Length: 627
Image (cartoon, rainbow, N blue to C red; front, top):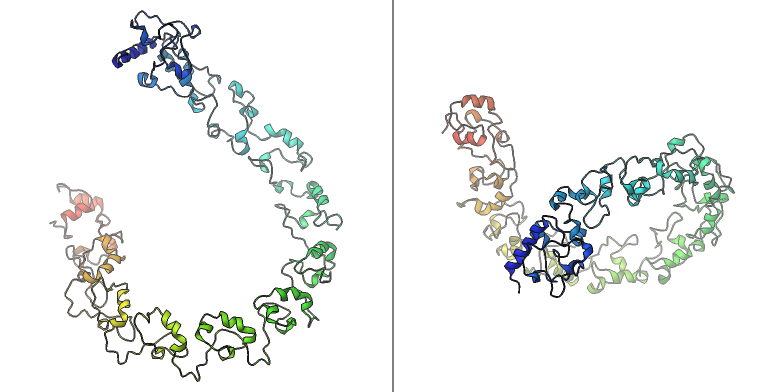
């Protein structure tokens, strides 16, 4: 077996031989990798072996000089520092290592060292800008072409180069005309819809067409101002069928209905059309389905319901029609569900509830009906949920609470009701959450807090209540915000701050409170934004600025270590020295103390710098005497 150190020396020796450009194509690559099974005469002359090791088995197999060992490997990247990628990976060694001279000479020339420049230098020496090592196909030409006067966008990105550059295959891309007509002259000549030549269209194709496709095109009609539309659009006029322009005798002045920007929608001027709409609109009459004009025998004088401005909405003129609506409106009667006319046995005399101007907001004439509403309104009774009439046992004499004019609002007549409220209102008691009547074991004598006319607002009569407030209001105590009573350790004797008539406003009695304010008011400190106490690094000793225990506002910041109530800084605004209102830790001295004056005053001061921090370092009390 060949020792690794011996094999390594042999590989390095081959590398030195290659530097002299001698040819031995099949001995420096893995034969199995590129399909070469041995040396062939066509691969070039044999390298002289005078200086090779005498152990032939390092490269050759026994029995034939042409067969190279299948396990012979040469790592080109590791041994030479140059990785073989793409097509170079499969290239014959002799393509680079031949008798033309040292390979280093040609590698310094770049791609042109081995490859002939078919572009003849017109595209520069940087071949890699267009070509890769995988094949010759150019890449990134769209972005390269964007540097020219004609970027490749839309359909042009897929066009072969020689379509615009006849000499592209020879590497000559010069002299191409960037105008559209230079390539599209035949398209311009052959265009028939419309005929560009007959219409006198300009050859600046980009006026109407885009770069992606010829159609759809946008024609700028400003270039043909003054010409009749029919000059180009006569065929459109002749072929139109909805409506048929020729049979209807429409004018050739297209602009009467159409716009230069679009054919549809159109605005037909009915100024001269005062009657006989059916002459043009017979198909509309015949195809109408809502309602079916033909089936119902509607007259063909369209103006009775429609206007010349729009078909919909249409207003049918009911003049002279006083009854028998169902003749036209039977489908409406049968399809109605609120209420279901057929199921409820409502009569087909529509005019009893509806008017000729509108179907909705039907007003049923209850004249003569004084009781027994449930005959028609049993479903309403069963579906009622607020309150649930069935579960609550409300009687079915609807008129006791409702009126003939409207279901809501309903007014329950409590006259004669001597029983307890809870008999009907147990569901309301059980579902009450503010407060939770069940959890707090509130009494079920509803009338103690509520009235017969309304549940809300309720007035709890605290007369005779001697128990602690927290007995009922523990949940209020636990959920209290913005002052978290639990976290703040506020006592549960609610009456200390609140009254029995209202929770808010509450007045906390600070008498006897000797602890730090922040014990209870840390949240207030952290949430304050004007100014931001946390960002500004304000101390948590609240009483330093807030002197009153009854209100936060009107705070006076104690600036004793840098006096602002006396001396040169008296009556300064905070923003004069603290430009960042969200961070009062930031301050500036140089806003008022100019650099020229300050430099003159500190000419002989050691370590002087014109910086606000340095000013404060020497003048912490704001005086000129320093510290």
